[in-house]
Image 1: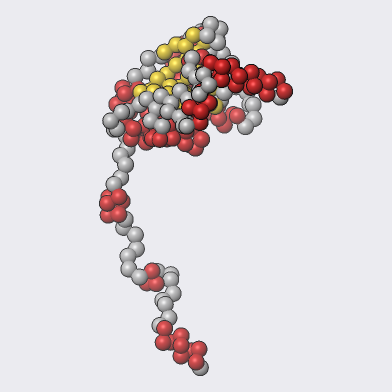
Image 2 (image 1 turned 180 degrees about the vertical axis):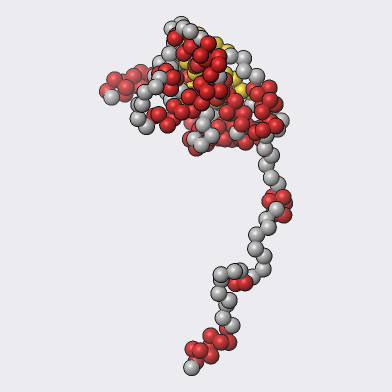
Length: 246
């Protein structure tokens, strides 16, 4: 840890030398333009590969850059980025040589992570024909990385967070990127976020209910709760007093 702390001091000194007000501006709040959903791999630093600095990019990372609809961590980040910070561009960024993708393609058990990797195996199932037609192992894994990114962008489009944001005055743009660790270059898969949403809206589209609609749609029991089946009727007040007096 001494190396980490020393590096921090050097970084602070260099920042202050370049811009004495740098840290004060950061302390006043953040207004990032981007949300980066990437892999936890230590070789893929979000700010480093995109050339962005502190305050420019909101970041969420997990194994194999997945967008899982039951992942409250991811959904919380997404909602905050879209509805509070108002990010303009949301990118899912995978990388060639991803260990999570390779593990999902293997027929081995790795423990707890197997449950997480099922989401990538679902990608294989959806694209099984294309996947199996690629004879070269390396090229098959590279293509699976790309297909995984594409499907995670589609998963973004399925969320009510993105659906609601698309109806706003400034809808966010969705992107699918792949980083090549071997040469440091980002590849844009040209995923049409708007087209993805349009293609799937007949299945996944939802609309937020208005409060009036929610109130009028309630068809539960009406009247005095004491009259509900299985509930004992309330004893009259006079009867209680009489019983006490006697």
